[in-house]
Image (cartoon, rainbow, N blue to C red; front, side, top):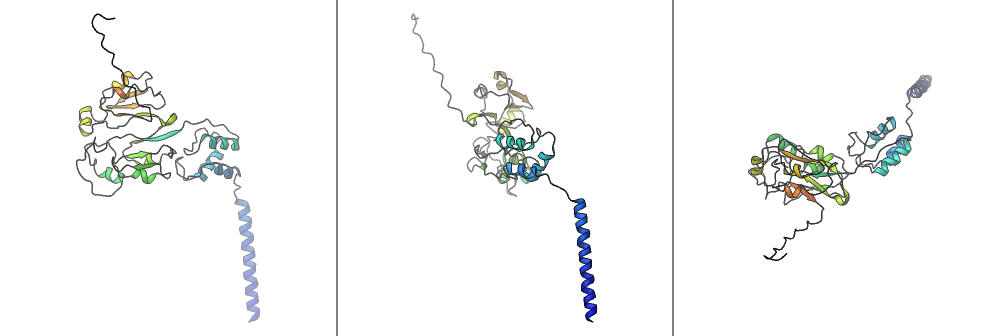
Length: 288
């Protein structure tokens, strides 16, 4: 009986040793040696894992950077130019500096401008509400105000204002990760060039209805009159589908367009107040 036990133990031990040897040989044959630069690149990235680069995380993006022969088309929206310069140095490659971007909300339809016509009693998600009906106001393009963008942001950079029901972007916290842009089913959030002192000029409307209909549903809607297009000296404004659009990379912030807009659909943000023009005093008759 004892011999049987001994033989069993020895047999199992030999099988275990043989199996371990086979697994070792297979592991050595098929092992993948990872490029040590991947760890260095990952450490240089912000580590937000926000998906703004369209990849599942910073590790995957680091692997893509190391693998690519040309990294000029790869961009981490959260990373600064300093971060990307450090990564380029690690990889021995060149990358151009990017212009900083910031999210803007292209809807100014607060209740005072865009009154509610009904009450929505359903799931508190913009994508669901957008799929079910046109919204609780007369404008089928405006913000639904249910906070999909706020929940998508990992940086606490966008919040729904309780009074206006519209998203408000905190420029200092916004990393241009694009999460809020993707989350909005109405496409009212856009990444635009971030200028000095966070100054912005943009058309805060995406309503493509004809002027009269758009104005009826929202007092500050763009009516497609084209007056802003005519006064822009830099050809930065285009008019298409009854809607004006200001190109953030062509715009020089001259501020000539905003006063021309009859509905105040063009917003000027973080600019000093305009100087009021002094009316010329009337010269009495006979005096020069």
